[in-house]
Length: 185
Image 1 (tube, one colour):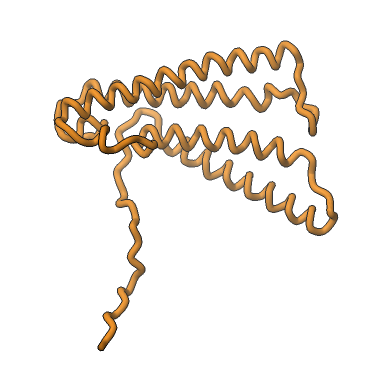
Image 2 (cartoon, one colour):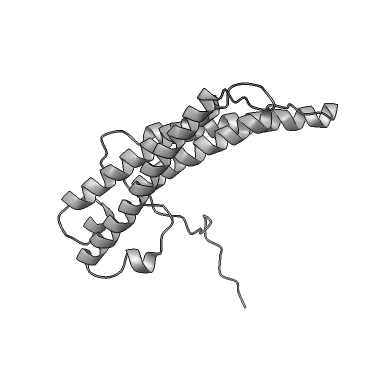
């Protein structure tokens, strides 16, 4: 019995490349921000591992900086995921049914996302203001904590603006099979 030959290239369940939706502010901003943040995070973590290995001590500031970088990285990734329609969802509800139903579901879900991130923006601005007024400092480095927290309302506002753009595109798109997902014809 002969074995079938293996394919020349590995067969993987790779997601096919999709064109980015037409947006006024390029998505490359968030893409490059994520790349830079991930590179800095990996470098800091690697250096801390080396220092711990050779000296049995670690840098005290790496945890604070790593948490800050992870928050900004997550928000940048979330912003791009919403625009590219790669966010988590229940596809049986979002992608099935008539184009009209899909549009309604897209408007409702993106409206909820917009409401959440607008609320997050407002509340995180209040958090940053409190940290500034009460002069809170970080435990390891001793810098003002608002230096870290200021990025939460900035990134939440960016996601809010991106989501508002998605809602605008969905509402203005002609009712077709791809219009519910904000795709361009």
